[in-house]
Amino acid sequence: MSRYWYCLLGIVRREWLRFVLQRSRFFSALVRPLLWLVVFAAGFRAALGIAIIEPYDTYITYETYIVPGLACMILLFNGMQGSLAMVYDREMGSMRVLLTSPLPRAFLLACKLLATALISLLQVYAFLAIAWLYGVQPPLAGMLVALPALLLVALLLSALGLLLSNGIRQLENFAGVMNFVIFPLFFLSSALYPLWKMREASAWLYWLCALNPFTHAVELVRYALYERFNPLALAVCLGLTLLFSLLAVLTFNPQHAALRRAS
Amino acid sequence: MSALQVTDVSFSYGARQALESLTFSLEAGRFSALLGPNGAGKSTLIALLSRLYDLQQGEIQVAGHCLRQHPGLALAQLGVVFQQSTLDLDLSVEQNLRYHAALHGMAKAQALTRIDAELTRQQLSERRHDKVRDLNGGHRRRVEIARALLHQPHLLLLDEASVGLDPASRQALNQHVRKLCREEGLSVLWTTHLLDEVQNDDQLLILNKGRLVAQGDSATLCAAHGGSLTQAFAHLTETEAHP
Image (tube, rainbow over all chains, first blue to last red; front, side, top):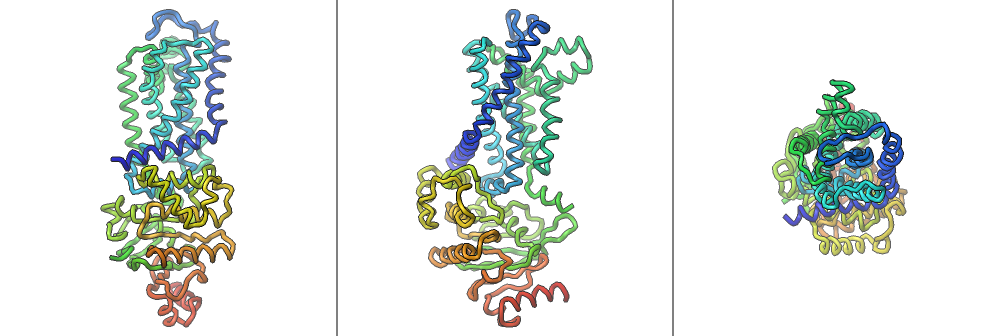
């Protein structure tokens, strides 16, 4: 059992070291949601008043509404960043060090997922702290209650990233995949607007948003920040995390790249 | 017990047969050279031995452990230096080594002890905290060898480890690995397409177009096929090309 623990610690440590060495990544991860919060939300504040909806007990500002979505945006970008790192490691050869470990491959991949998720959480809490200073102040206890929700969402999106990376042949193809994944997931969700507003505009768009797993990730975090529980969101996030993780492990095969090149 | 036993291993990339019915064993504690021209299948064999690729046919045993049935036990006996560098350039020498030690389930204290020992042996102790990016090619290779030996494997695989090095560094690396073999009893499989890296007392395997065309003591093979290694290699590979 201890061998597995030391391996997990080593993988998390490596991801932390790489994160520390890429400080620009930390700041760019914060700039993106802060731009949305400070600029976009300010511009739409007047146009997008938010009626009383769960989990809020009163009218809220638009900035308050979008903070959970922006926190999940950080997790989404980091999940895809982790995927990019996997493709890069595969291209550069450093993946081989991981694969020649005597520990089970599924365990190694799970460690990578957890390491990526933990690094993402640091960025999310840095963003929540800045949002707090800006005036978006969920209950302090909610910040703690949201931790398991944020971790689950981070794992979900990291697993999705890993699954996608298994199908990407080259680094150059990654940008296109990111565009087809990140922006639809984010915009077709409740991150920026409540779903009831979408239903008023278009029924089919509403259903797209309602079925989008990212919507449930955002709602899970939204409820948790206000110390409330959303069972549907939890079930969807948990189920999809397990599904994506299983698929990612099953489809992970380093020789596929070589076999595809030969075909 | 042999260091490595390969039995009837074949592998194909789709329609292209890369390895065909390979069967050989490596004596423990000996320097073995796998020689073959470019495209012979050397790197494919290394990928199979290190379990980067799954076996399609045949069996591989590393220090008595079956790679298919007990991959963890087999990989624990194996240290690998790949042709393409696998060091994280942005991390220091020690950070790279600690990562590898963790992947083999080593606790911090044990890892640091082994890192001290291997860096001393590779004469790289003073470069411990340097970024790998700041090392020259020869030093990077020695860091990779140190890394491959951290978990004290029985068999060290080197896949064209000297590629990209200048002649002096190539020779130094080759001699260094041979010294490990002599003094530590380490079994070594050194793959190369460069004939001058092979010595008379090596166990020699010659691979050509995915088939093992010769195996045995280097001196014996040379005597049987023309006298020099160059002549033997040319004879064996040209005979395969034009039977």
